[in-house]
Amino acid sequence: MKKNRCISAVVLAAGKGVRMKSKKPKVLIPLCGRTLLDTVIDNLLKVNDFKEIVIVLNKELLFLKRKLEARNQRIKVAIQLKPLGTADALKSALSKVAKAASDIFVINADVALFKVATIKRLIDSHMHSLRAATLLSAVSESPAGYGRVIRNKTGQVERITEEIDLCEEEKQIGEINSGIYCFKKGVLGRALGQIRRRKNKNEYYLTDAIGILLTQGVGVVSAQTLEEILGINSAADLAKAARIMSSRIVSGFLAEGVKIMDPANTYIEANVKIGTETVIYPFTYIETQVVIGKDCSIGPFARLRKDVHLDDNVTVGNFVELSRTRVGSGTIIKHFGYLGDCSIGKKVNVGAGSVTANFDGLTKHKTHIEDGAFIGCDTVLIAPVKVGKTAVTGAGSVLVKKRNVPKGKVAVGVPARIINKKRG
Image (tube, rainbow, N blue to C red; front, side, top):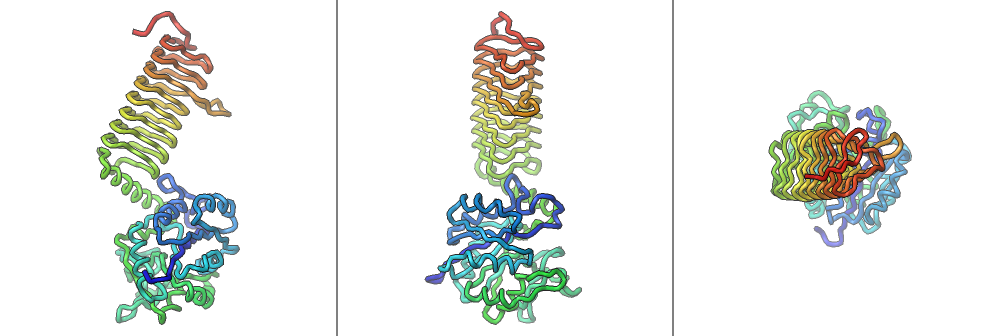
């Protein structure tokens, strides 16, 4: 990297995302448990080259400003007052960029599948050159939907053209624009001032800056895979991106020694932890913020929802759903059932068909099952309720809220009552 040069990142997150056809702002739509915007920010924070990360939001997203800036000291927020396109959005960010920054990296918030190594390669190429701009491109056999990188007869970049402006011949070009760039800050401001508003969309296109800066040098770095620059603009794009992201997550766990028996039919979201030697059987869905210990067995057809924590040697079998639940080591929940807002101790057996009735229509309540308890098949636990250590519930029992089962006792019936019979 050239001496005395430092780079700031700008994330363009002010777009409306009309093609997504969602009431939710596009950048807040989840991808494998994280929003598109969070996914991009998380990866950019891994790039130590960035002095700061400036997020450009529209006025409707102003409520995110405080949360984003509190998240990391490198994050700043700029507001695009009117929806006037990507060039105007970048111009809105310039006042927030540190004076010490010599270069600016730019990415759209809907390009969420890029790899950190690719971004570092782009930055290194740009910062070791004297070019005014460097862009990331890729080659696609099906380039429809993307702007194209137009080159002259000598192979030099001539311009970037959005698909709406392509002639029939240019539509056959396979090299596509990623919307990811590095610019020298000093020339960028002047180039943005020269961009004219496009009549067809009443917007200022950032892609026009490339044509303006050609005489000062424009370079191209190729992405290693096409999926890295997938723009997520529709529900179909989102589904494709989710498959790619989940596959990457699954591959990461396989490399760490987790035994995933059927990777193609296992869905794991971001921010999940799984211990070594754990086995995941097919058609299992593990949501974000789930922690699974070592030597566990999960599935098939299991669903672990947010805020589930399994200690070591836990078995969660077929058609079991857990939500906001902690399970102690050695516990077995093998067949059918729902356990929500529950704390379960060590070496508990939960029989088939058992459920916690945790919601009374207004509030969700807790269920506590202590070490060594035995929950008979088809037990309904109406929260709040507690089952003591080594206690037993008979098959088909209904535990009424606040009628706890004491340590070592047996409860049976509807509603359940304590009987004198001792366990075993």
